[in-house]
Length: 286
Image (tube, rainbow, N blue to C red; front, side, top):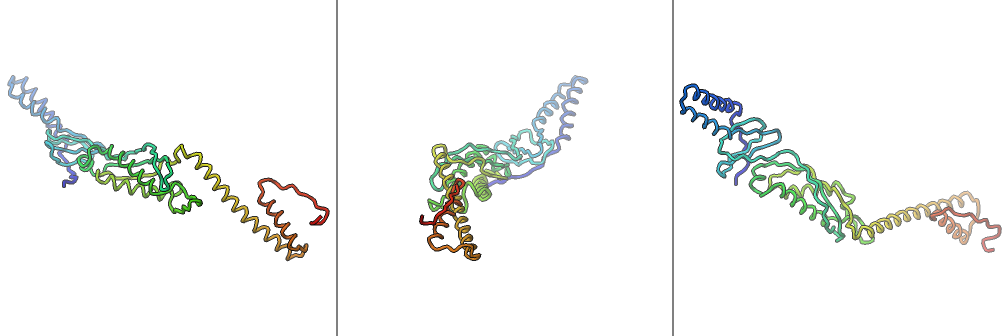
C-alpha cells in the first residue's frame, strides 16, 4: 500500500527564465534570420509552460503521471514539474463543519435534536485523494454517523424517578461528551487522512413532540428538590428552636404544646406565602 511521499520539484523561476529565453529568443531569431527551423524552439517552450505550478501556504498539489502517484508538494513556492503530470489541489487549511440538526434517540429512548461543530484538516494527502471518493463528503457523512452513535450512548439528563444515575449526560457533561465525540470522529476519519482538531456539541434539545412534557418534568424535579431543601432546613430550625427554649427555660412545653409549636413553625417556614399571625388569648384547648 502506497503512502504519502513529499517531493520538492525544480525551481520555477529558473524554468521561467528558460521558457522566456526559448519562446522570445526563437521567435526573434526566426524573424531576423528568416529561418523557420527556430520555430521548433517555440513549440518546446510551449511544451514547458504547463509544468509551472504554484503552491500557496497551507496548500498542496498531488502529482500523478498517467494515473501513477508521483508525490505531493507541500512546501509553498513557485515550481516546475513534468508537463505531463496531473496536478490535484488539496487544501491543508483548517475547515469548519456545522452539521445539520439530527433527530436521534438518547440512551433512554427519548428523541433529541443534536448537531455538532467540527474543526478538521487534511493530514495525509494520499489517503484524502485516493482512499476515499470525496473526502469532504466523507467528513460530513461520517460526522453525522458518529453523532448518532454518541447520542445513543448517553441519556439527555438524569431523572431520579426512573432510577437514572449516570455520571455522564449529554446536557451536563460537556467536556466528557466532546472528548468522546472527538475520539469517535477521529477514528472514522483516519481512513481518509483527516485530522480532527476539535469536535463539540453545537445544539442539543429535546425533539418538539416531547419538549413541553420534558420541560414540565424538569420544572417538577426542580420544585421537588427545592421543597426537599426547604423541609430539611425547616426541621433543623424547629429542632434548634426547641433546644434553645428548653435550655434557657423560657417556657415549659408538654408534648401536646411541642407538637402544636412544631406544626405552626413548619407551616410558617415551608409555606409559599407570608404567615398571618393569630393571637390566642385563651389556652391551647379553649
